[in-house]
Length: 197
Image 1 (cartoon, rainbow, N blue to C red):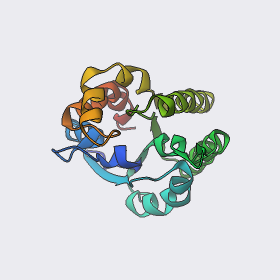
Image 2: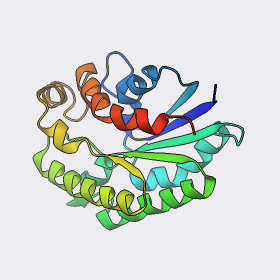
Image 3: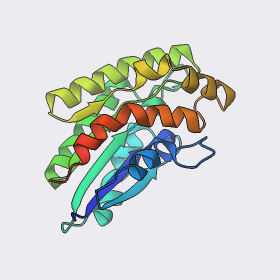
Image 4: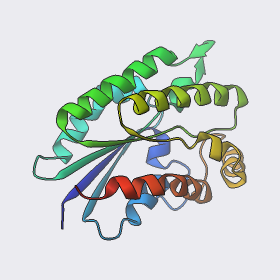
C-alpha cells in the first residue's frame, strides 16, 4: 500500500479545541480513511493567523513528509485573521490573501498535494461577515491556482448543531457534534483528494 502522509496545518479549529472527544474535524476525516495507509499529523495552533502559519508551516511539514512518501498538506485558517483588535482585523485581508498565495506556491515547489478548507463561523455576527468575505477571496485564489477548496462557512452558519454548540462553548469552538458536521462537509472532497497517486 502507498505511504500517504498528511499534515493538517492551521489554527484552533484544526486542533479541535472544544471537542470532548479530542478528534475535531481532522481526526474524524483521518479515522474514516479506510483502504489508505495514512499517517496524519495535526499541526493546529491556537490563535494563529495566516501570517503565523506562513512563517512556520514548511519547517514543520518537511520532516514529516520525506521524499519517500506520498506527501499531502491540508490548510485551514482565517478566523484569527478576522478577529478585531484595536478596531481593525488582526491581519489585513489583502495580507491574508498574499499569505495563502505564498503558501500555495511553496507547496507546489515541494510537489505536495494540497487541500484548503475554509474558515467556520463563530458567535459574532460582525466577525462572521469579515470571515465570509475572506472565505470568498480564498476560494478565488484556490480556484485560479487549480487547488481544491472546501468552503464550510455558509453551511455551518445555518447549521443548528454547530451554532448552538459554539454558543454553549466559548463562543468560537463547538463540541463533538459541531466538528462532526464540519467533517461531513469536507469528507466528499477529502475522499477524492486522498486517493493515492
